[in-house]
Length: 379
Ligand code: CAA
Image 1 (cartoon, helix red, strand yellow):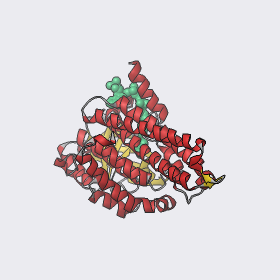
Image 2 (tube, protein in one colour):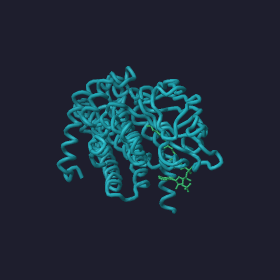
Image 3 (tube, protein in one colour):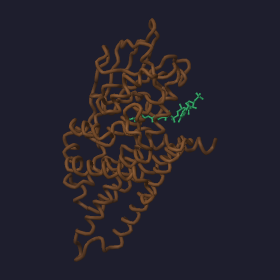
């Protein structure tokens, strides 16, 4: 598959790989340790066009195709999974939603600066009681005059504490359940909108995750994204694409863990020879390489389905399910190959092992992906 990439896709891979290996990988351990992706690097991603890579050129984006996007995410995630998710959320969950469902005014006002990387976005769907069951929203948006008043809180929000623009989901009509959910665009600084608790996580520790609180936040009707009651479909639509990005992130984490294990197995001498000479290690490496390639191909396949305008919900879920379980498995094997050293923070596989786990959870757990796939095949 890699051999068949077009010129533009190869250019993007080279550009992102250069940036990721020179400016991200050397500080990945520090990002993990300090729990923050430096703003300087986020700014550089913006200057490279990565924060609006898939937005059309009409709105100052890179106009890149979906394969280029997954290549970029994989390359970044190979260097640092926390950095990759900043880019993925911005492109898939925020910009794509605004471009597909936003009014012309919203695109001018919000999408353009996001695509140029001047502003950062967040996607606020999850609540303490609305995780897998995303329709169980307690945040409310009550009609008031010609606008809405928002009350509620969201948690586990990526990029939340520094996001300039938040895509928010709230219940406008509880009786309608999922058809009563609407989406809104909320700007940082809007009275009543505050940042709550910041989370300390097992992995992707550099990625910001926090609570967002909305207390009597007044929004105009122009802040609504799409039609009233269309919010759940907007969330599901952007999450379909988001899941392809998470699959690519998982492939990148797995690739990093595999490459570290491969290198280590050739250097580590035990019983008088490099451990790569032992069949036990060889088989692990063979299985790791095979599963990664399968995960990458499923990810490319979902990306191609999206690019060509075909339905891709099932394909995105298959890619995310398989790639995330592969990342967890490969990172586990990579730690095993490193033995005691793999358990130490000095070795990058320890971070890969912790980072991999989230890919089985966010943007829909593996159980949710299996629900989506099963519903698609059963009809
Ligand atoms: N695209 C468009 N519409 C869709 C859709 C899709 N992929 N999937 C479902 N819908 C529509 C259905 O057609 C249905 O429409 P009608 O009411 O008109 O019939 C409606 O949505 C409800 O569908 P379901 O009955 O299937 O909904 P459900 O309540 O059973 O839930 C679910 C389905 C797949 C479990 C869904 O709730 C889900 O995906 N849950 C996981 C949520 C999730 O991924 N959260 C991640 C948070 S964001 C995050 O992690 C980002 C981050 O920070 C990194």
